[in-house]
Length: 209
Image (cartoon, rainbow, N blue to C red; front, side, top):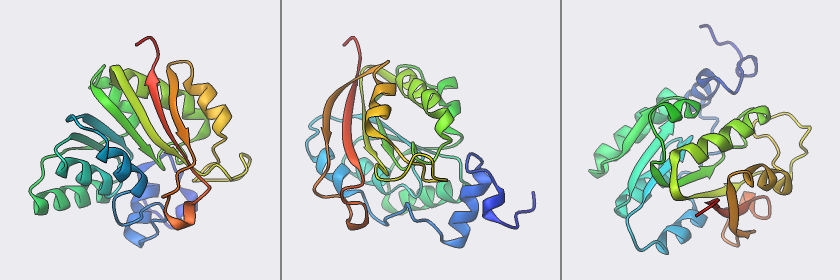
């Protein structure tokens, strides 16, 4: 496939993101573990099985693995997967790094993970796929599992082009309510500077448990 212009490639295709990695245009990548997730992981006293969707360069995945958690990191961009593998090897860390589309995870995982972690993946997919995304998260979490996420950008018009596509928090939580109950929701005080006031930290628990 000949790629002449990123805009000509649908963001639902790995080629779109691969070109971003190769050009260095990675506005979603903050170059370090997410401060909000770092604060959260410090409160977790037991080892968790954590699946990170659209893990990118894997800053959070590597950080969680360093703290003794069992991490599965998923991305369909080849460069992201390569970068994670190289970084994990340098640090002597064992991660399950998968080069695949997140929407195929239900073919290999069912009721598996304690945690599904979300940051800048939900806002990157086609908004018409959000119901499918939520169903997938429910499918791969174990019966007492939790969805831990930063929903971003909450200040962007829903009719605007993306990615990132705008996220209306009330609409989004209503979609999740089919499978999940909100147990925590807050505007985090330790967001990175350029996202302060533009994202909401949530923890959702699977219903019926």
